[in-house]
Length: 127
Image 1 (cartoon, one colour):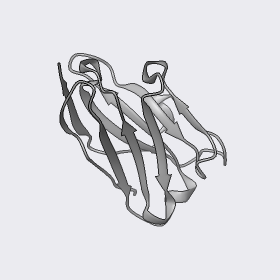
Image 2 (cartoon, rainbow, N blue to C red):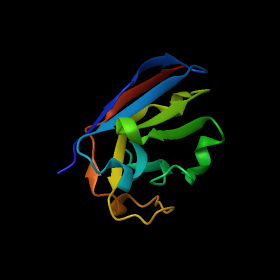
Image 3 (cartoon, rainbow, N blue to C red):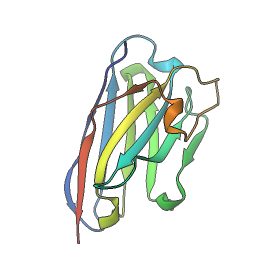
Image 4 (tube, helix red, strand yellow):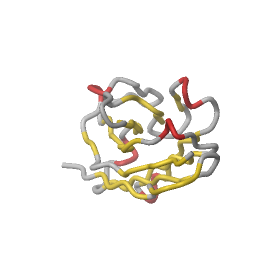
């Protein structure tokens, strides 16, 4: 069983930045595609970004509009989400997730395609 622990959330003013981290337990991190999702109050969980096993390929939701960057450090079992130019509508709980069956350069934006989930970290953007 893989455990994912997110950190780095907090309260920030509109236009500010945050860097989320997600550390995974175990020795198989480099074999997982990783994704970030978010869930705002009263809304469904939605895809934010994903990265392939070796970071060759990344994928972003349209609403990111170049403001976020996903990256990973397989030596540290950690995936990151750098978020810049934050907007109040980015307020949500952010979750990282691991897809253990992804092919080498593949990733998915489908929530059901992920096998392990973290507990989430709250991001609040004030106007």
